[in-house]
Length: 435
Image (cartoon, rainbow, N blue to C red; front, side, top):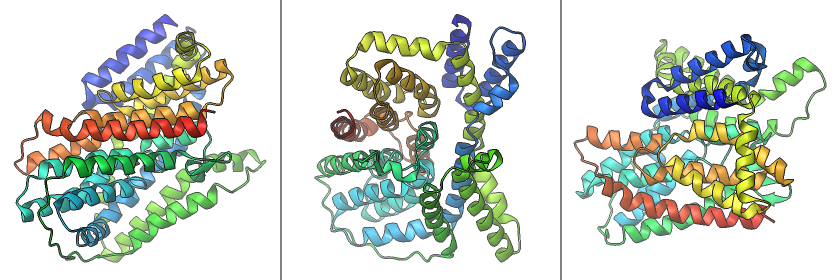
C-alpha cells in the first residue's frame, strides 16, 4: 500500500507542477500500475483497468463539448446576453445580470465555454461605458464556476458524481423525496448575486444597450435543448436484463450527447459543403481533459486495489469519529481550500471512493457527503485566479485585450462571492440531507 500511495502522490505533484503534461502523467501512472499488476505486486489486470474507465462520462463530455461549439458558432448566447443587458438600468445591475446569465448557461454548458461565450459581451459593455472590464469578466468567470454543480451536465465534476453515485439527470433536482443539490447551488447563486450588488454598488452609470446580434442557425440551440430533454427521458428507462443491452444502458447518457453532436456536425458540414464544422469541433474539444480522466480512472482503481482508498477513509473516520456533521464540515471546507490551488477534476475523482468508504464505516447515507464534496470542490476554485479553468480563461482574455489583472482585483470579487455561496450551500445541504 505504501508503494501505491507514494506513486500516487508523485503523480499528483507532477500533475500540479507540469499542468501542460497532465494527461500524459496520468496515462503513465496507469501504465505503471498495470506493470505492477502484471509483475504480481498488486491484483490489477488490464481488463480490470479498462473496466474502471467511466466511458459514459467521457462520451458525455465529448458530445457536450461538440454541441457547445456549434451553439457558440450560432451566436445564440450573444443574442440572449444582449436581450438581458438591454433590460437593466445601470452598470451594477448589468454586471450582476451578466454574471447570473453566465451562471445559468454554465448549468448546462462547460464553464470555460460559457466564459468564451459571455466574455465578449462583457468587454463590449465595458468599452461602451468606459469602465474597466477586469471586474466584469471576473464576475462572469466565478459565476460560471458556481453553477457548474447545478446539473449533471454542468461540469465534469458533476458528471463524475452522477455516474459514480448512479444518479440520473433529475436526481440533481429531486432525489429520494428531497430537494437535490440544484436548489443548494441556486440558493448560493442568489446570495452571491447580493454580494455582487454590494461589490458594484458604486457603479450606477446608466446602460443603453441595443440588441444587434443575429442568430445564424437555431438548430444548435435545439440540439442543446434536445440533449437535456433526452437525458431526462433516459433517466426513466428501466435497466434491461440482457447483458449487451445493459452495457448500452450504462452509457446511454454519453451516447445521447455524442449522437446529437454527430447529427449537428453532419448537418453543418452538408449545409456549408465543407468539413469546417468538423474541424472546429475537433479543435475546440478538450482532449487533454478526456485523456486525463481516462488515465486517472485507471490510477484510482489501482490505488483502490492496493488498499489506499480504504486507508484514507479510515484516517478521516478516526478523526471525525461518529460525528457526521464534523466529517461533512471537514469535507466541504477542506475541498474549498484544496480546490483553490489544485484542479478539482482529479481531486473529485479521487475523493468520491474515499467519501463512499467513509460513509460505509459510519453506516450513513453518502449523499450529504457527496454533495458537500461537489459544492466545496466546485466553488473553491473561485478563491484564486488559478483555482479553475474558467478563471484562467477570463484572465487570458483580459490580457489579450491589454488589461492587467492583479491578485487583489481577483480576490476582491472571488473571496466574498465564494464564501457567500459556499456558506449558503453548506447550510442548505446539511439541513436537507444531514438529518
